[in-house]
Structure formats: C-alpha cells, structure tokens
Amino acid sequence: MKFSNDLVHGRLLKRYKRFLADVELDNGEIVTAHCTNSGSMKTALEEGAEVYLTYHGNPDRKTQYTWEMIEINGDWVGINTNHPNTLAYEAIRDGQIDELKGYTSVQKEVKTGQSRIDVYAENEKERCFVEVKNVTMREGAYALFPDAITSRGQKHLDELIKIRERGLRAVMFYVIQRSDVQYFSPAWEIDPDYAKKLEEAYGIGVEVLAFHAKVSPNEISITGTLPFVLKRQP
Image 1 (cartoon, rainbow, N blue to C red):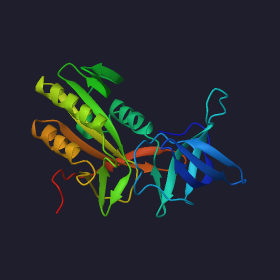
Image 2 (image 1 turned 60 degrees about the vertical axis):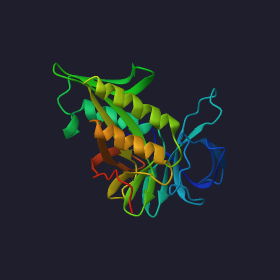
Image 3 (image 1 turned 135 degrees about the vertical axis):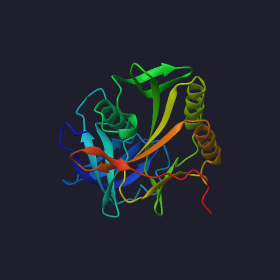
C-alpha cells in the first residue's frame, strides 16, 4: 500500500481525548491531527518522537491531518487502524498470502450475521471470511493484541466461531505494524476474556494468522508471517 501523497513530518506533542494529537511540524506550526487508534497505544506513544501525518486539505473535515506513524526505538510503527484492512485485502486479492491463495473473488466489508467481516473470498470450492486487526503493542519479543479491553473484538470472534460452525472457512488476521517483534500473542493481562475467546475460536477451527508489516513514509507492506502463542505466558 503506497501513500498517494507525500506525508508531513513533525514531532508529537501530546495525544488526548483518544482521537486527537497535537504535532509540531518542521516549520514550527502546531497542528491537531486525527488519531484513528482508539486503544491505549501502550508502547506506541512517546511525546517528542518523530511522526508522519497525511494532509487532507478538505474544508469539511474538523482536522486537516491524520496521524499515520510514529518512530519508536529507531523504527516506524504504523498507528492508522484503517490501513490493515486495505493491506490484507490487497495481499489476498493479489495472491501474496500463501495461506489464502487461490480465490477467484475477493471483496471488502461483507455483512454476515450481526457483523461486517473485513474481507470475504471465495472460489468454486469454498467460502472464506477474514477479520483483520491492527497490532502495535510490544512486550519483549511479543506483539500483543489488544492494548485495551475490546468487547467489539470479542463480538468479531463470536461471529467467526458461528461462521466456522456453519462449515465455512474463518480466519483471524493480525497485522503487526512494527518490525521489532518475533512472536504474536493475545494480551492476557489486558483482556483475558478476549484471549480466552481467541483460544476457543482456534480450538474449533478458526485460523489465526499474524503478519509483519514494514512501515515507512513511502509505503506499508506485508513482509512475512509471525509464529503465534495463544497460551498465557508464565
């Protein structure tokens, strides 16, 4: 996924009210940017760190900038939660994911049950529903999800369980927008109910896939898989 326009560089002053961030641009101007990430952003938030923003120039928007990424320990971490859906869709559509190759039709945002599933793929043999989550939290060598309690995330897992019980393929697809981790795991200490639900879903055949995404000011691309550990770590 390439950015269509050059991003705007600055430094983070503060994030507040979950969806807002004040940034000082290189020219000294202070602007307010929209933060799409509603989580705690634990381990992906550092005042004074370098950031990149998208400028919109749309008079109908309350904020003219969207916060895209932040530099943490010398590496870019993508915090825009809208991008993983696009990344997953494009990668599946283009046959870049070995585990999800061979589909002749790939669509975004398909309604099933009480939810919309992020990606739907099918061929003459099977139907596949893929739910996508953005991951930015790091603890040691592990990428963790979620970084705050998520009842919505549990609802999506419940929907995948129902899909699997109907005999269809169901996939939980995590996009880790940082490169300084080696494994993926649910965040047991933050949301044990979500972690238990993920274990339950995996136990009945919902597939779990975790992927690194390389983040840069020019593009974001999926670069490879991460092994996952679903059990609570000692």
